[in-house]
Each structure stands twice: as C-alpha cells, then as structure tokens.
Amino acid sequence: MSRSTPIYAAMRSIGAYVPPKILSNADLEKMVDTTDEWIVKRTGIRERHIADKDVATSDLAVEAARDAIARAGLEHEEIDLVLCATVTPDYFNMPSTACVISDKLGIRNVQAFDISAACSGFVYGLSIAKAFIESGMKRNVLLIGAEKFSSIVDYTDRSTCILFGDGAGAAVISATEDRDEGIIDIHASADGSYADFLMTPAPGSVHPASCEVIEQGLQYVKMKGNETFKLAVKTLTKDVKEILEKNSIPAEKIDHFVPHQANYRIIKAVGDALKMREDQTVLTVGKYGNTSAASIPMAINDIYEEGRLHYGDLMLLDTFGGGLTWASALLPFAGRN
Ligand code: UT7
Image 1 (cartoon, protein in one colour):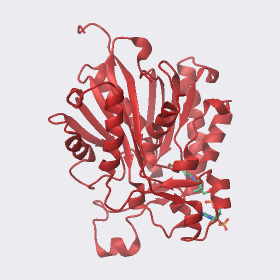
Image 2: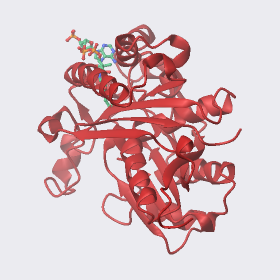
Image 3: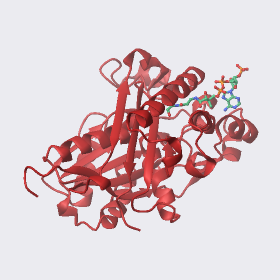
C-alpha cells in the first residue's frame, strides 16, 4: 500500500462472550422489592448474565477477542493495537485491562490501553481505531468492550441492580484500500456537567479507598435513572438524525440499527423518531440487560451468529452513558460469514 493511497478502517469481524450464570427477574424478586412485571414493563429486561467471583473482566474479554481475531482470519501477532473499553477494569489504576488482555492472548510489544467512556466506550474506541488506521499508524486494531458490571452493582438497590449484566464483545478493525468497506462516519460527544447522573463515586482521587467509602457504599454505581432516561432519548434522537442527514443516508437504507441496550423504552423512542422498522432494530436487552461498553459489540455478534449480518450490510450504532457521553456511528460490516 503506497503512502499516497487513501486508507480506510473496516470492521473485519465480531465476537462476544457471556458468562453462563443467569440472574433472572424471578431471582431479583427474592433479593429486592421488585417484580418481574415492573422490570419487563419499564426496561424490557428478563434476565442478565453474571460472572463468577473468580472471573475478571479480562477473562470475559479474552473469550470474545479470540473469536474476533479468528473470524478476521488473523494470527494474534498481526494485531498492532489493543483497545479495551470498560468501566469495570481488572485493576482500578494499573495495569490497564488492555495490557492484561494482551498478555493473556500472547500479543506482546504492541500499544495497549483502556478507554473510559462508560456505555459509549465501544463507539469511542471505534473512532480511535479509525484515526489510528487512517493515519497509517496501525493496521489491525483489536477493539474490545468488556464489563464485569456486577462488580460495581449494589444488589440491595432496586433502582440499579435490575438493569446491569456482565459480558464482552470484540471486533477487529483493519486497514483497507476499498472505500466501500470503510467506516463512514462517527460522532462522539460528552458533557461533564451531567457527571452526577451516572457515576461510581469511589475509589479514586476524590474518595480513595477507605472504611468510610465501603460503609457508605460509594464503590457502587449510582444513577439518576429518570433524568438519564429523558436526556438519553432527547440526545440520541438528535445525534442519530444528524449523522444520517450529514451523510445523506435515509433511515430506511439502514440494514441494522444497533442501539446501546440500556432500556427497551429508550430504544423504541429513538427508533420511532427515526421511523426505524422493527426488523431493522437489534434487540438484546431482554436477555443480557445493560452490559455497558460490551452491549453494542454483543448485539452485533448476536445478529452475526444468527446469520443475519452479511458483508456490506449497513449498520447504525448509537450509545449513551456515564460522563455523560454519547456517540453514533455509520459503517458497513466488512467481515465474512
Ligand atoms: O446505560 C447508560 C444509560 N442508562 C440509561 O439510559 C438508563 C436510564 N434509565 C432507565 O432506564 C429508567 O429510568 C429506570 C428503568 C432506571 C427507571 O424507570 P423509570 O420509569 O424512570 O422509573 P422511576 O425512576 O421514575 O421510578 C418510578 C417508580 C418509583 O417509585 P415512586 O417514587 O413512583 O413511588 C421507584 O421507586 O418506580 C420505583 N422503582 C421500582 N419499583 C419496582 C424503581 N426501581 C424499581 C424496581 N421495582 N426495580
């Protein structure tokens, strides 16, 4: 590939992993004051998967990454950048989970780092992979979204514990000269003035680990659910309309609308505003709950494994999460079945 030839970034493959153990709504009924009916009506969630105590986020990630690398037809040594989007890293400070994953996969001496953008992490990561590839700095990026979200959930707080699950998704993003295979566009934004809508207050430099932190439960995720819900619908509808208009792509041309799987009602409201048909919209929230940075690649993997995702299919991704952060992306799938 000569220096003057434009290079594009193509999603060559997808993979995902969910831990086997299921936490159902019936299980949650025994733990907090809630009902299956309330959870299904307000969120669309029926069950979520929870990793065992001795399983780390990197363990989930490695399973997803192995599939993604194999499906891209690559050897592990051909990966030259490892990115892991997560808010439940193996270790809060260092090493990064991307470093741990690289080691477990035997990928040595390549750049590896984590992305902290909560539920938007995978699409943020896509924009980073695109920039590295289009600048010619990297050729094969392993992009992972992985969460052991159960590690930061307070299972006595009914307003959050019903929502989240564990899992991982991974994609290989590779350089291509074929413009038709390349990621078309990515929007990624943030507004830190809404930081307290969705946060884990500790541990960190504001509240280092201490007995008080544990006593007050500051290590758990806190969410202003209803406020976040309303802002998510408003922001995503605007953002997704803008990316479609900017690229002159009408909603009916989208083969797969893959939204972040936080709440069925958010997905439905944004989908309705775009006049998205049901068969265009990918829905996995019912069986996985909200898996944060893993939710979008897990959803893409679902349609891949069902045989519904084909080379050249046009995908629209959208996501919203802690920060607050949000992002949308337009891209063809450039992998083979
Ligand atoms: O992924 C990152 C972004 N996250 C999101 O986008 C999530 C956004 N938020 C949501 O999905 C929804 O706001 C929730 C599912 C978290 C809550 O649904 P809601 O319709 O916004 O309910 P609410 O928070 O306004 O609460 C309504 C009522 C309250 O009772 P009162 O005050 O009306 O008596 C809550 O205490 O529902 C109660 N409630 C519950 N009741 C039964 C809250 N959680 C539960 C529960 N079971 N698990």
